[in-house]
Image 1 (cartoon, rainbow, N blue to C red):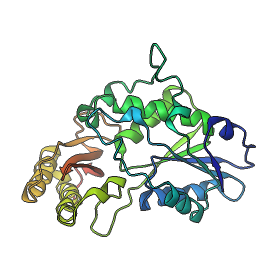
Image 2 (image 1 turned 90 degrees about the horizontal axis):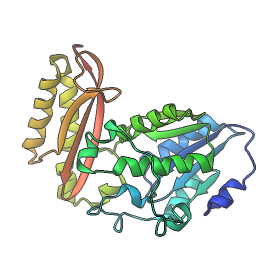
Image 3 (image 1 turned 30 degrees about the vertical axis):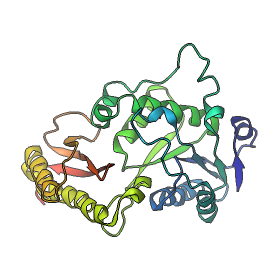
Length: 282
């Protein structure tokens, strides 16, 4: 496994014989990430290359968010990458990725547009601009044929697909189903900040999603009501509970849609989502 810590080192790698498949992370790797690595290995085959990027991107953290305290476990991350047959780890520092950040008169960034202002964008203004900008930079540096992203961050996945389409990038973006722990909670690097009681309380989030799925045939109002009731019984107040189209369009009426929630637990914002089929009886 090769470890590249600068754009120059990444660009200097010889091209792989088969497809290059990238998995982008902020480190603190968990089962969700290793699932992405395993899926990536399947896409890359024996002649391709699996690249994992590890970069905690300051531009997608707000001024009151946890950039400094975000978990960093680089040594363990490298071990997991090696165990899951990753070929290249690209782990630059902030100065390598934003060398002119302190001196530039203007900051160049990709703008997420209207889909970046809903859901998470309401709570975290500018987050998706920062996310898309670093993803674009990493696409340029890793030159993948395929990029894998988890469905847990569903809004992120939709926006990355939109960016790739809008900018005519010659790559395929694949969404990989959310990996969950035994209690149903979606794997996240921030879960480690939960206490034992907080973890127990947080298990209401996946239960609430399933409650929404069960009443999807009754429409969006029934879904939101059911989800909110489960969360309130666990003394949880969601930042949002919304049903949107699979492309995040507003007010879907029938067919495939997405139920999305964000729930603070002990200061940790848990985001989760699931597919729902409106108007189809269970």
